[in-house]
Image (spheres, helix red, strand yellow):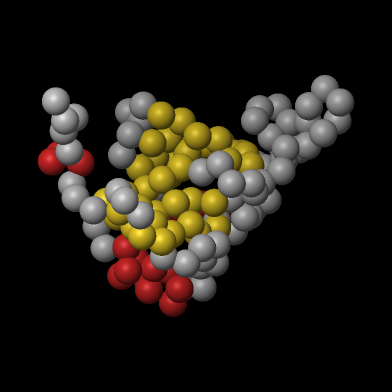
Length: 135
């Protein structure tokens, strides 16, 4: 069972399902309505909601404002071969929001789902199992 849930507002739940399941190895757990789906990948539960899709995460706020996709907040998925993953995603036509960036902890790239929500793909410099607090 997933331990962390993230909700993304998406313009098209079916397109988001195809993206996350087809490119990022998520598994669909349920889609009880065209405006909502629940996916999992390891301990991450991803809730996809269409704006204005009735009751639930996509419904309008009290002032009538509808949730919208996009922004820069994102979740990060660890991958073993970032360069190879980026090549595969480029060939599939996935939009890369950033170039490959190298930092102190590893390499990353930010991609967009079909609604413009960012997803960070991250390849650590070394395996987390080897990271230990210094004493």
